[in-house]
Length: 215
Image (cartoon, rainbow, N blue to C red):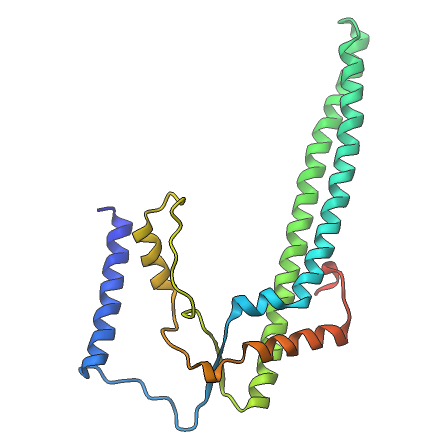
Protein backbone atom coordinates (compact mmCIF):
# COMPACT_ATOMS: atom_id res chain seq x y z
CA UNK A 1 0.00 0.00 0.00
CA UNK A 2 1.35 3.41 -0.97
CA UNK A 3 2.17 5.83 1.92
CA UNK A 4 -0.30 8.41 0.60
CA UNK A 5 -3.11 5.86 0.48
CA UNK A 6 -2.22 4.58 3.97
CA UNK A 7 -2.32 8.08 5.49
CA UNK A 8 -5.70 8.81 3.96
CA UNK A 9 -7.08 5.47 5.16
CA UNK A 10 -5.86 6.20 8.69
CA UNK A 11 -7.40 9.68 8.63
CA UNK A 12 -10.69 8.29 7.36
CA UNK A 13 -10.66 5.59 10.04
CA UNK A 14 -10.04 8.16 12.75
CA UNK A 15 -12.93 10.24 11.45
CA UNK A 16 -15.16 7.17 11.45
CA UNK A 17 -14.18 6.36 15.05
CA UNK A 18 -14.95 9.91 16.11
CA UNK A 19 -18.37 9.83 14.46
CA UNK A 20 -19.03 6.41 15.98
CA UNK A 21 -18.11 7.51 19.48
CA UNK A 22 -20.46 10.48 19.22
CA UNK A 23 -23.27 8.21 18.04
CA UNK A 24 -22.69 5.85 20.97
CA UNK A 25 -22.66 8.67 23.48
CA UNK A 26 -19.04 8.13 24.52
CA UNK A 27 -18.01 11.56 23.28
CA UNK A 28 -19.45 14.82 24.53
CA UNK A 29 -21.48 16.44 21.70
CA UNK A 30 -20.73 20.02 20.72
CA UNK A 31 -23.48 22.36 21.80
CA UNK A 32 -24.07 25.61 19.92
CA UNK A 33 -24.68 28.73 21.98
CA UNK A 34 -28.33 29.16 22.89
CA UNK A 35 -30.21 30.99 20.15
CA UNK A 36 -27.55 30.46 17.46
CA UNK A 37 -29.12 29.98 14.03
CA UNK A 38 -27.27 28.48 11.06
CA UNK A 39 -28.24 28.29 7.38
CA UNK A 40 -26.51 26.79 4.36
CA UNK A 41 -26.02 27.48 0.66
CA UNK A 42 -25.02 25.29 -2.25
CA UNK A 43 -21.99 27.23 -3.49
CA UNK A 44 -21.74 25.42 -6.84
CA UNK A 45 -25.35 26.31 -7.70
CA UNK A 46 -24.87 29.91 -6.57
CA UNK A 47 -21.84 30.39 -8.81
CA UNK A 48 -23.55 28.64 -11.73
CA UNK A 49 -26.46 31.12 -11.60
CA UNK A 50 -24.49 34.32 -11.02
CA UNK A 51 -24.94 37.01 -13.65
CA UNK A 52 -21.62 38.52 -12.55
CA UNK A 53 -19.75 35.36 -13.52
CA UNK A 54 -21.55 35.17 -16.87
CA UNK A 55 -20.78 38.83 -17.66
CA UNK A 56 -17.12 38.49 -16.76
CA UNK A 57 -16.71 35.27 -18.72
CA UNK A 58 -18.17 36.90 -21.84
CA UNK A 59 -15.78 39.83 -21.47
CA UNK A 60 -12.76 37.58 -20.91
CA UNK A 61 -13.80 35.47 -23.90
CA UNK A 62 -13.93 38.62 -26.05
CA UNK A 63 -10.40 39.51 -24.93
CA UNK A 64 -9.29 35.96 -25.74
CA UNK A 65 -10.71 36.17 -29.26
CA UNK A 66 -9.00 39.51 -29.80
CA UNK A 67 -5.65 38.07 -28.74
CA UNK A 68 -6.15 35.01 -30.95
CA UNK A 69 -6.94 37.14 -33.99
CA UNK A 70 -3.85 39.27 -33.43
CA UNK A 71 -1.72 36.16 -32.89
CA UNK A 72 -2.98 34.61 -36.13
CA UNK A 73 -2.29 37.80 -38.08
CA UNK A 74 1.25 38.02 -36.71
CA UNK A 75 1.89 34.33 -37.35
CA UNK A 76 0.60 34.60 -40.93
CA UNK A 77 2.87 37.57 -41.64
CA UNK A 78 5.88 35.76 -40.15
CA UNK A 79 5.18 32.56 -42.10
CA UNK A 80 4.94 34.52 -45.34
CA UNK A 81 8.32 36.17 -44.67
CA UNK A 82 9.86 32.79 -43.80
CA UNK A 83 8.64 31.29 -47.07
CA UNK A 84 10.15 34.16 -49.02
CA UNK A 85 13.40 33.66 -47.12
CA UNK A 86 13.44 29.95 -47.94
CA UNK A 87 13.37 30.74 -51.67
CA UNK A 88 16.52 32.87 -51.46
CA UNK A 89 19.97 31.37 -52.13
CA UNK A 90 22.26 30.77 -49.17
CA UNK A 91 24.12 34.08 -49.19
CA UNK A 92 25.14 36.70 -46.59
CA UNK A 93 22.11 38.71 -47.69
CA UNK A 94 19.82 35.78 -46.82
CA UNK A 95 21.47 35.49 -43.41
CA UNK A 96 20.96 39.20 -42.80
CA UNK A 97 17.24 38.85 -43.56
CA UNK A 98 16.91 35.76 -41.37
CA UNK A 99 18.14 37.39 -38.17
CA UNK A 100 15.25 39.88 -37.74
CA UNK A 101 12.76 37.08 -38.49
CA UNK A 102 14.25 34.95 -35.72
CA UNK A 103 14.02 37.90 -33.36
CA UNK A 104 10.43 38.51 -34.39
CA UNK A 105 9.57 34.89 -33.67
CA UNK A 106 11.04 35.17 -30.16
CA UNK A 107 9.14 38.40 -29.56
CA UNK A 108 5.95 36.74 -30.73
CA UNK A 109 6.41 33.93 -28.21
CA UNK A 110 7.01 36.46 -25.43
CA UNK A 111 3.92 38.40 -26.52
CA UNK A 112 1.81 35.21 -26.38
CA UNK A 113 3.07 34.44 -22.86
CA UNK A 114 2.30 38.00 -21.75
CA UNK A 115 -1.24 37.86 -23.13
CA UNK A 116 -1.79 34.49 -21.47
CA UNK A 117 -0.75 36.00 -18.14
CA UNK A 118 -3.10 38.95 -18.71
CA UNK A 119 -6.03 36.60 -19.28
CA UNK A 120 -5.16 34.64 -16.17
CA UNK A 121 -5.02 37.88 -14.17
CA UNK A 122 -8.44 38.98 -15.44
CA UNK A 123 -9.92 35.62 -14.41
CA UNK A 124 -8.39 35.94 -10.95
CA UNK A 125 -9.98 39.39 -10.64
CA UNK A 126 -13.33 37.88 -11.53
CA UNK A 127 -13.15 35.25 -8.79
CA UNK A 128 -11.90 37.78 -6.24
CA UNK A 129 -14.85 40.01 -7.05
CA UNK A 130 -17.30 37.11 -6.80
CA UNK A 131 -15.84 36.09 -3.43
CA UNK A 132 -16.14 39.62 -2.03
CA UNK A 133 -19.71 39.92 -3.22
CA UNK A 134 -20.57 36.48 -1.84
CA UNK A 135 -19.37 37.53 1.61
CA UNK A 136 -21.10 40.89 1.45
CA UNK A 137 -24.49 39.64 0.25
CA UNK A 138 -24.38 36.59 2.52
CA UNK A 139 -23.86 38.89 5.50
CA UNK A 140 -26.83 41.06 4.47
CA UNK A 141 -28.97 37.98 3.86
CA UNK A 142 -28.06 36.50 7.25
CA UNK A 143 -29.03 39.73 8.97
CA UNK A 144 -32.32 39.93 7.06
CA UNK A 145 -33.24 36.30 7.71
CA UNK A 146 -32.02 36.26 11.31
CA UNK A 147 -29.12 33.78 10.97
CA UNK A 148 -25.79 33.94 12.76
CA UNK A 149 -23.90 31.74 10.28
CA UNK A 150 -24.26 30.83 6.62
CA UNK A 151 -22.21 27.75 5.80
CA UNK A 152 -21.40 26.03 2.51
CA UNK A 153 -23.30 22.76 2.18
CA UNK A 154 -20.67 20.50 0.59
CA UNK A 155 -22.45 17.27 1.45
CA UNK A 156 -25.51 17.70 -0.73
CA UNK A 157 -24.17 15.57 -3.58
CA UNK A 158 -22.87 12.02 -3.71
CA UNK A 159 -19.17 11.34 -4.37
CA UNK A 160 -18.60 10.22 -7.94
CA UNK A 161 -15.06 8.98 -8.72
CA UNK A 162 -13.68 9.49 -12.21
CA UNK A 163 -12.98 6.16 -13.91
CA UNK A 164 -10.72 7.84 -16.45
CA UNK A 165 -8.45 9.46 -13.87
CA UNK A 166 -5.03 7.97 -13.15
CA UNK A 167 -5.68 8.11 -9.41
CA UNK A 168 -7.37 4.94 -7.99
CA UNK A 169 -11.10 5.43 -7.44
CA UNK A 170 -10.79 4.41 -3.79
CA UNK A 171 -8.26 7.16 -3.23
CA UNK A 172 -10.49 9.68 -5.03
CA UNK A 173 -13.39 8.85 -2.72
CA UNK A 174 -11.25 8.98 0.42
CA UNK A 175 -9.80 12.35 -0.52
CA UNK A 176 -13.29 13.67 -1.22
CA UNK A 177 -14.40 12.40 2.20
CA UNK A 178 -11.55 14.27 3.87
CA UNK A 179 -12.58 17.52 2.16
CA UNK A 180 -16.22 17.25 3.16
CA UNK A 181 -17.32 19.33 6.16
CA UNK A 182 -21.13 19.03 6.06
CA UNK A 183 -22.79 15.64 6.57
CA UNK A 184 -26.34 16.94 6.82
CA UNK A 185 -28.11 20.26 6.37
CA UNK A 186 -31.81 20.84 6.94
CA UNK A 187 -33.31 21.92 3.58
CA UNK A 188 -35.63 24.28 5.46
CA UNK A 189 -32.61 26.50 6.18
CA UNK A 190 -31.14 26.48 2.67
CA UNK A 191 -30.70 30.07 1.44
CA UNK A 192 -29.18 29.25 -1.96
CA UNK A 193 -31.96 30.72 -4.09
CA UNK A 194 -32.28 33.83 -1.94
CA UNK A 195 -28.54 34.47 -2.16
CA UNK A 196 -28.62 34.07 -5.96
CA UNK A 197 -31.44 36.60 -6.22
CA UNK A 198 -29.67 39.09 -3.95
CA UNK A 199 -26.38 38.85 -5.83
CA UNK A 200 -27.97 39.14 -9.26
CA UNK A 201 -30.08 42.10 -8.15
CA UNK A 202 -26.99 43.80 -6.74
CA UNK A 203 -25.18 43.13 -10.02
CA UNK A 204 -28.01 44.63 -12.05
CA UNK A 205 -28.11 47.70 -9.84
CA UNK A 206 -24.34 48.21 -10.03
CA UNK A 207 -23.94 47.64 -13.77
CA UNK A 208 -21.33 45.54 -15.59
CA UNK A 209 -17.65 46.34 -15.32
CA UNK A 210 -14.72 44.87 -17.17
CA UNK A 211 -12.71 42.42 -15.03
CA UNK A 212 -9.76 44.81 -15.14
CA UNK A 213 -11.88 47.38 -13.34
CA UNK A 214 -12.13 45.15 -10.27
CA UNK A 215 -9.81 46.31 -7.49
